[in-house]
Image 1: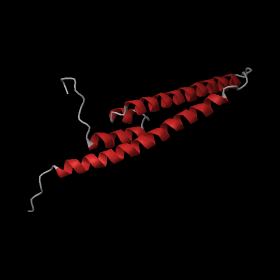
Image 2: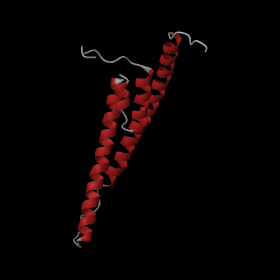
Image 3: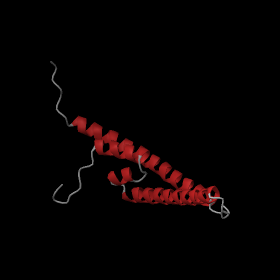
Image 4: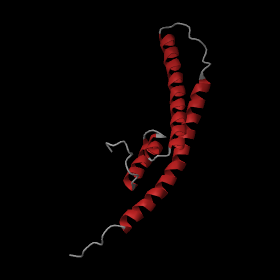
Length: 124
């Protein structure tokens, strides 16, 4: 690893990538599994969706603050950001689900290859 070469792609690395893809951030697990195009696309969609939802949340909190202070609040014209944010993040998660299924198949194949090359277990 210190010589600049990437770590070997193992079944454990693929399984960890699947967990990160589906339960943490879509795209990061794909990048870990060296699926650069899919991982980058998933990550961009996830970050765009997250950014849109956070923008909507900021506007919503600002409006609620103004209403609580009994001031006039601007009309809510940013509802589309919540919708598109959910769509983008959902699309990235579905894309990462498909990529994770492919990674699962590859991990099972690698696990079979690793076990095929392992020495036989001795009976006690």
